[in-house]
Image (cartoon, rainbow, N blue to C red; front, side, top):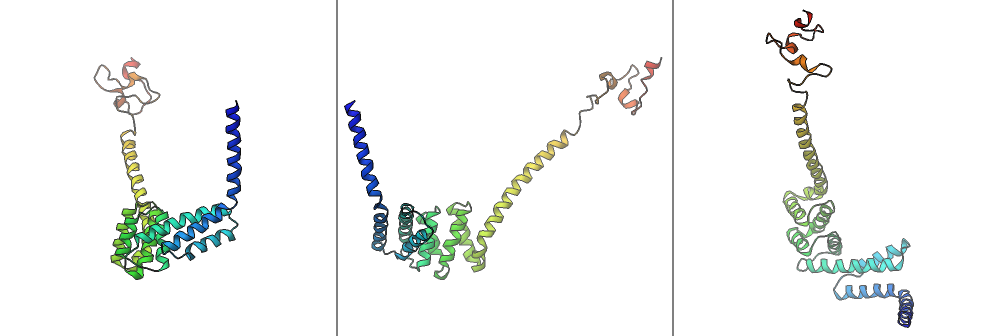
Length: 230
């Protein structure tokens, strides 16, 4: 019993300490992220603008700190991937967007190497859009490489082409399903000849003693077979 009381007291003490630290912790986390960015050669303006945006929207400082830390990590990874392919701040920013969207450093480095410097930012942004639309990073990279060969307009229009392509793929699948359904419908349009039509007794489809089929000989007449009149 005494042990449980001691554990409870310790838990409450730690909770109080954490609550006290939480009041200053978010700003400390932000300052640490800014310090890491400076050490990695990342313009801190990319983080400060995000922090100012969060404060303007009234977002709690705890959430702002988490966003700054996450963004700083993405910027650092993007900076490593783009190393050897120097670009402007915009390229680094869209590179971080790509990282946060699920693009790995190898794919980001590849697109940066393939794209001319004046089209690098657009190429990375296009790659990110394709991944956000559902393409795998490797597939998106192949599309961007192909568009780079076709010119600036092809690169700019690529995200909309990707959306239309996905729609066509879904349509093809549905079309195939409808075709199969139609085939089944054709084979099941009516009962086999040996099965009597609704409302007629089974013997109506059986041949009489003369060998003629009543179903074929009556031609829809309501008169009973000749044998029935005798």
